Image (cartoon, rainbow, N blue to C red; front, side):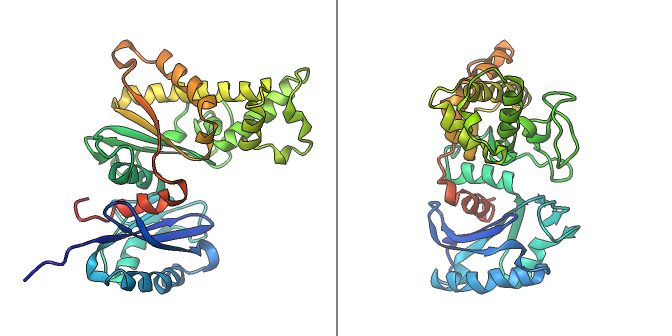
Length: 324
């Protein structure tokens, strides 16, 4: 009896506001996609039903469930080992949610789940610039700092499934408060879009005598990493200092990460990467300055090749192929 060739997988990215999902083929092409509001339902079962009602017609149009290897899900605090979402701060479903089991029962397909940052690393390894790499790190520079560590072709998950939280490593002991965790001086407090904004407000206060285009923004709430970038490319001294400071801290942190896992490359993703060389040059310089000789000039710093709008779906989908 012939075995049905598995041509497709489903990728589901659960975010705090929206959940995006799509049908993906082996080449990383999203055949069809849609979304639902994540927190529109107080009950997880109703949330899954909402996805089911939109996704099953897509699965049928692609040839039916027997053409699918499975479903991959990226979620905040997703645990690959258990298939549970565990104590996710930005979701209204509290405690431990057995999401993978609930979805497998609903869809009749195998379901694998991991956290969103590890899903991004899987996407790079399956479809992106790390396709032929066995050792690399992904760093997502967005509202926070996400990360995925790949060693010997496998995601580092650790004893309990939560390894690889590089954004929460302490890079400035006793430094800036992270309001979400209460820690002081972690990388995410400095090298995220939120961190860039905090640095901007601090420097504007401490450099009161220095002219800056940022001072023309009268409402501090309107100062963002994007406005800092716009001022920096116009040659604004404080805006450029913000990126130098951010890159210095990020580069020091990357040096630590390199000396831990000796990756072939570090792959950057997320909104802050749009600053390009403004942040990459000081980052590379600080990283190399802080590496011991055996690691110097070996690690490539790359930008993700995945289309930003599709990357989360692709990353989640990479979990679902039979060979994972």
